[in-house]
Image (cartoon, rainbow, N blue to C red):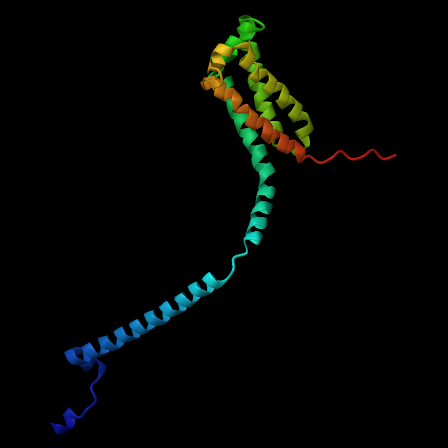
Length: 203
């Protein structure tokens, strides 16, 4: 029996022994805390290094400017397409809230009998303008078309002041709808400025 008491304790027996299990858990917990301490130290060192490292704001600024330079024209073209094509379609479907204003303008100018035909024509022109803005080669064609359209849709500010102004410098909802076209014109100017110059005729 003495010999049996000196035999090494196997893992199975140790696992069933509460004292040995407690020792094993304590050892594993110690390893865990040791790992956590080392991880914390590494992370702290990284944070301190990043805090001491000087951020190159000029480099970041140049990267952002280059990024916006790349995306400005495509985004501008798509934005104008979206506005004009969308608004043109809802006019064709008879769903546009601008219909009463357009009707009043027609009555004031050429007569109500021409309203339906002219409103459909206006809708088609808006859709065409939107589509043409998607094609860089069409820039020289679409810019004059856009400006002519702007002159027409902004004319109620003079011809129909009761629809546009609640009081001086306070526009109605229709007035705001028209005044926002200044932003469209500004974006279109930016697009026009990006157009490639015409090649000089070779002699």
